[in-house]
Length: 197
View 1 (tube, one colour):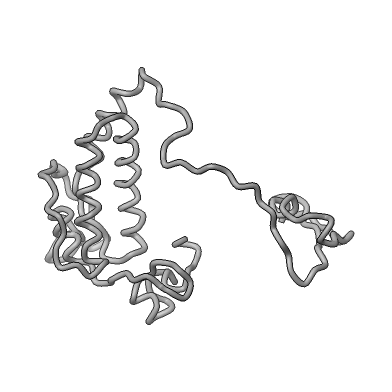
View 2: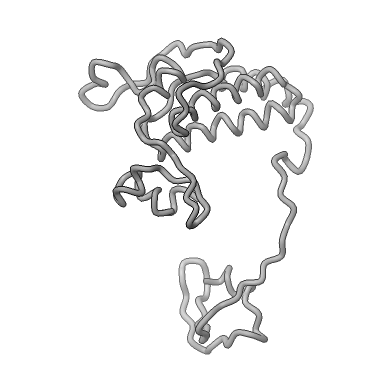
């Protein structure tokens, strides 16, 4: 693909005249048994490269207070991962704005939510957080007798989780146990599909 071509050295790779147009630009044939990509390393930081605008600071803090509420989590790793990332981003934003109370509130929700996935029987008790005023609309036909997953807050949502995570020592990643047992479970997350990196 075009974005790979700049990472292959012409000194060690034979670029052929075979070429066709792809969605991302010209695709050029490379005749080699193995490719070696050379990528320049860049510094990675958890924080934004530039400070936030001071005139937007109060609006962002107000929105964080609304966003950092315990709303429950999905009972499977695929959706759970997306949901918990929301709280992790909020925690980093709160830290960047010097809002330690909001950062700790988000972190407590994350810890509580992760406990069932790690096989822990208990987790640090989170500080009281506001509860949402409305319950999300359910699927066609309604939610069923127990309501939506995690409607009772992070602790209730965590109690519904059925799949623990473990560290895969072969490939060095964190995967769901059900995903290792059943390739089709969790959208293939146990086999490092494109949904979990």
